[in-house]
Image (cartoon, rainbow, N blue to C red; front, side, top):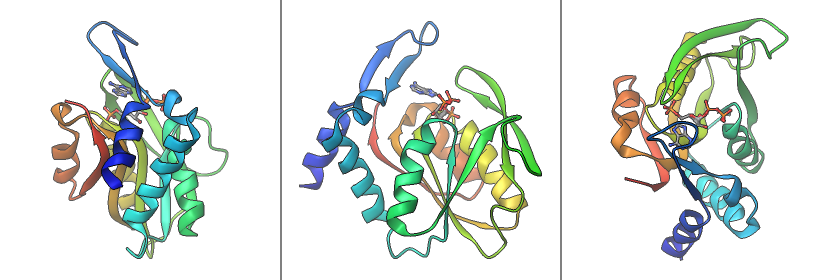
Amino acid sequence: AKEQQLQLIKESIATIPNYPKEGVLFRDITTLLNDPAAYQATIDMLVEHYQNKGVTKIVGTEARGFLFGAPVALRLGVGFVPVRKKGKLPREVLSMTYDLEYGTDTLEIHKDSITAQDNVLVVDDLLATGGTVEATVKMIKQLGAKVVDAAFVIGLPDLGGVERLAKEGVTSYSLVEFP
Ligand code: PRP
Ligand code: ADE
């Protein structure tokens, strides 16, 4: 049943060559979101993996991380904290600049959104180079909290994200992988 759910999830993801630039194989989760059985299976599998693991807070990264992090937080009964692109959060923030598979950006988190007592699960749709979640993990650590794990719907193992997060002492989990 688990293998069937994973197959359903994987088959619901669209692949677009050369978007947003030449040479990138874009893995598009909008088709997964538009398939209620696939979306439900994705959230169910993440919840099943992380329930009873002592998670006290979910941090999700803009924008696609919100679509998976928030439903998982509701189901686990813990708070959801958005990490946003620069200039979007109204109160006092921590900032971190990072590299993407295509470009660079700055992420921010509200300083009072997590405490040193929190055990944080980071959720995003996709792990590529790991730059996004590395920056996110650094901010969570600066706030004194512990990162339990980083969870993704999609892992792209050839792009080095798993190793990059391991250097930060963070283990990761991806539901499906594309070579
Ligand atoms: C994408 C994706 C991940 C990140 C993965 O987000 O949703 O957050 O890139 O790449 P990395 O592992 O190399 O950091 P993007 O910055 O394109 O923003 P979006 O979610 O707002 O579309
Ligand atoms: N973010 C970074 N790399 C990506 C890819 N190949 N597909 C979708 N989103 C991405």
